[in-house]
Amino acid sequence: MKFFCFSHKHGLPFLVPLIRSSPNLEKLQLVMEDIDWPDEEDLGSFTLEDYSDIMFERLNELEIIHFGDTENELDFVKLVLAKSPVLKKVRINPHRCIDEDEAAEILKILLGDCTPCASPVVEISVGKF
Image 1: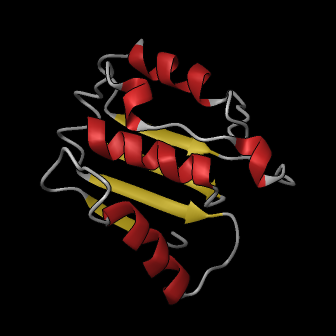
Image 2: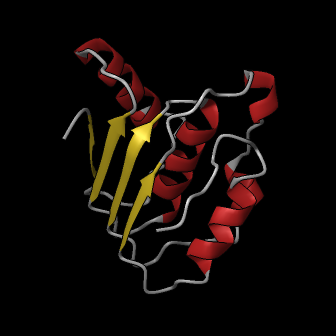
């Protein structure tokens, strides 16, 4: 098992090449460390344009355990949604207990009009599994 710090804006440039170098990747499970998060201004963000050259052509399942709903983590899920044409299932397991309203808010962000989705059949679930 590899541990990866995803809470800083520089974490993604290490994760994306790792995924990119695995062209046959069909399932991806990320276990986030439940730590004290840095200040929001330290997290940074990125856009889909930053990774316009990447496609997750075979990825059909993404699971994130201990999801912290930081902007950077939400942006990563948006990237996966936009770049995975055969994605079928996204499961997000928050690091803390959330109610239905909070889960609905995360879904609204991920499925909103501003978030492109390459797969017409993706099913996104948020909550404890």
